[in-house]
Image 1 (cartoon, one colour):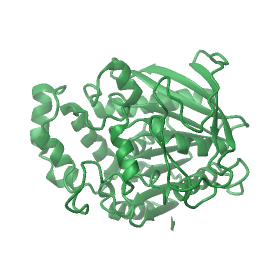
Image 2 (cartoon, rainbow, N blue to C red):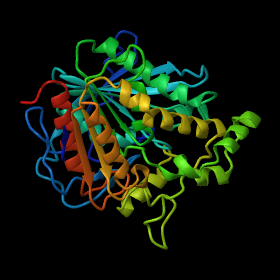
Image 3 (cartoon, helix red, strand yellow):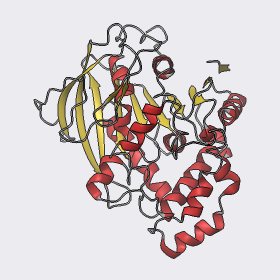
Image 4 (tube, rainbow, N blue to C red):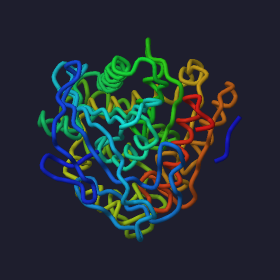
Length: 393
């Protein structure tokens, strides 16, 4: 049945978020463990988040983008504990930076959050706070070549040889670490954009068992990947020098069609969001570095994971777990909503319980657009409760 429907760099504190830095020490040798308090966005562990406008968009590295006056209850706190993790990437070179956000109350489920291309996991702090406020643990990392992982390694836009395997297996490692910490809790995976591709590959890996799969900005039906990209030229470039920056022509082919509906005066990342402040902040975030060159092998890895996520094998092998899909009707990454509909249809044919949420007039980041953010987070929270067997929560 188809149902209709990140944090600051060191030394920077998010405005409005009261961060206590008293360390509680490490636990089980798995990383620093710090208490954190963040303002609630109108939710509680016993009720849904308040929908509607008024929720400010949290700036990626310390600013708050105002949308309108704060909602009632915004000054409440979300109490959480932040655990920092590190582990060696599957590529044997990078040290993956990861975080575990735990609620002050007894947790009821785990959500593994997987970020997209050219960004980092702490861009989702508002979503993390909302999920933690509902009693969910959130685990997330910055991929090799991304965010704090890249900031520490000095290597951006590259994950080494066999990049597709690297970025998927690093999420498997995070999954296993989360399972060590919370072996008995229901487990839901949420991935956005590239993260939606990784999430679909992750849930098919040996030993990975999940209770629900949520996909935001789902990458499917991308014209550039499916028809424009010269795949033979890309393979030749990888063979010649995989670590070299991909040619502008190949990158341009990958993003073919992204600007078709933007009009004559578009900016290079206007497809990300309709809201100018969200787009501006996306570009200014030093942990994003979306403009960093992608290596030939990472571009190949993107294509490889895309093929895995959208191939018949995914639909044939996905366990019978509920799936939620979130997409903007003006998002080229999801073929303007048509790709999301096609994935939902194919999953329904396989007997899956599918929620499909397509938001009119909204572009790629439905979780950041001020007019849809609260509604999307409400729907995600309700989905996690349902996947965890807590329909009446």
